[in-house]
Amino acid sequence: MSESVSVRCPACRREHLYAAPAYPCACGAPVVPPLDPAGTATAVTHRAWDDEWISVRCAVCGREGEWPRPELGCSCGTLLRVPVARVSAQEEEEGAEPQAEPTARRAFQPITIRTARDAVTAAAVYLRWLGYRDIRRADQRPTSGIGIAAHGLLAQVDPTVRPASLRDVECLWLTAMTESAACVYFSLSGYAPDARARADTLGVPLFVLDLTGTPQPVNTLADELDSTGAR
Image 1: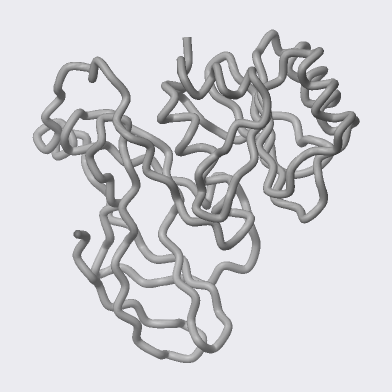
Image 2 (image 1 turned 90 degrees about the vertical axis):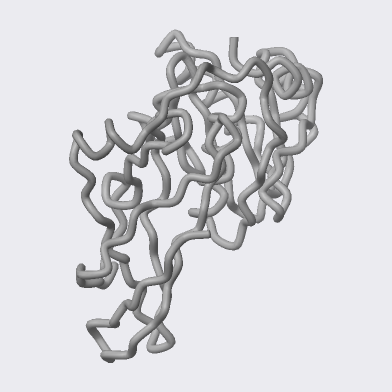
């Protein structure tokens, strides 16, 4: 359980009590961004990938992962970016207790989806659970949704209310081919029939993200990826 800190809205001056959410590390331990109780919250006026993600090291196994920067919505309508404490390299080294890599994956712990940002987080958490590392925003913007990448993998997350189209799947595959990477598609609203058929031909695993944040395999390729993880 993370410690709660007082957060003041710079717009209306209301005070809020905030506790950062915990995210599951690949080792199964909860990872919580360290909050700065002496810091000042700032209003989010625009979105940028580098501002939305922070590196947090797991205190149990020592892994460092990218996780969403803590945010809080004020009742006045302002979205607040909660200050995060800076941890020195020495403190990280002293605080982490690296252990051997787990021989089996722990049960997947989903991230509830309420926003498009949550959908991207859920997909990133799932890819990390599969064993992919260095998850980041993709260099090229996809035709729809948001692109994320890992070592040797390109993923597309489509949080829209329409099924992913044949063109969406083909564009993802073509982009991945130019980067000599595998690819995987996550959609909140499923896939058009011709998109599913084409994905099977091209070798693209398809997943549907339910609102609990659990990716559900749509084709055999996704079933295999879910079972075997990253290779």
